[in-house]
Length: 102
Image (cartoon, rainbow, N blue to C red; front, side):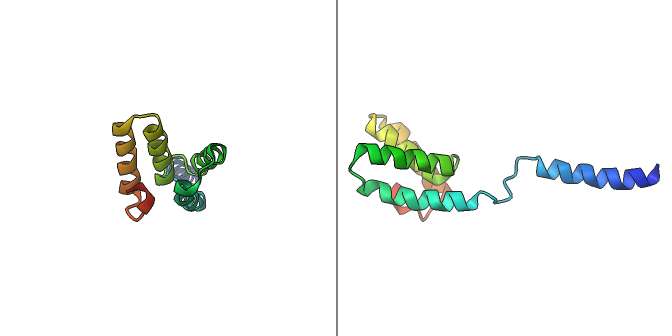
């Protein structure tokens, strides 16, 4: 009985850590790629290409600063200036060196 507890308790602890929702930075590469793609957005004139690029950015890192920047650009295009400013601020808060969001 004692041996089972010695094995079961650490196993439950490890399981709880892994399932806690913490990303462990495994998705970091996607967010880095999304930031690089977002930096190219201001130079894209073709609406279709821009839409594809924006969708790819959100797919790579949906909660990251690049996705916030995309949300800001989309809000700005639709005329929701206050929403756009808020999204740009969130992007800069998450990534202060993200110059295109400023």
